[in-house]
Length: 282
Image (cartoon, rainbow, N blue to C red; front, side, top):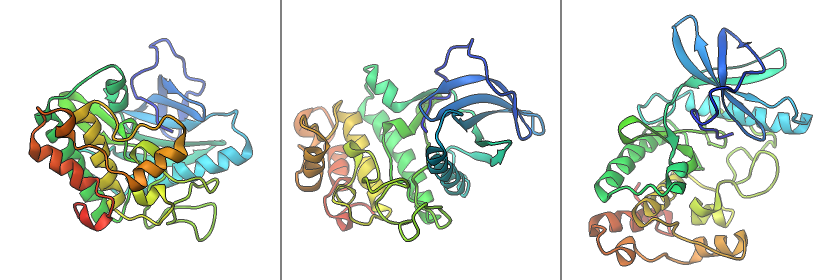
């Protein structure tokens, strides 16, 4: 579940008042599978964000998303980096499964782009460098995100990016509902491809096993969009055609679309988005 930590109306009232030791102050956002609340940690005296399930989920849906919650807590909980959201706690209590994480004030990168926000090349370089450092740290700790995209990058003050939503990340202690499929390119619930098509690596698009280099490709696709103002591939006839484009076609280099983009940044994007994983940054 990926909900902004600062987008709901101030008047939204919580339906629960406490989970674990954490008190709930107000609702921050709500989606199809649950809600995010602003909470308070009385022990450390700090604000926190709390993600919970919707009570309307079926038993099968709850099991699926509970697995994703556990995976998010286990993957991100292993990590401590200034550009990765910090997980404080995760548990189930009284039928409520929840994750407690640092409270981020800002906006998802995807929403900034939807609003027409454009970043100058030097700012794009700074944002991507920080995200690359965060992913390098995660990879050294055996965590592969597998769904890097603007919606999973949260921008806080001073253009500081935070990688969020590790629900489908691959980590040594991840949980899968299907034994034997934990490291394969499938979702927890069915055999759909894992990831988001517009930012999916060629190996993801063709259903092959992935490693850390899939995150490098996806980050390159994000950088492409930040520089050019559009996604690398835009198919009009459905996801199958889009996946074929990702797997077999090369997009025009950023500087070919916008000549003002420095050649060095354009080359970084194209190397990160190489079709062959071994040709990407390692």
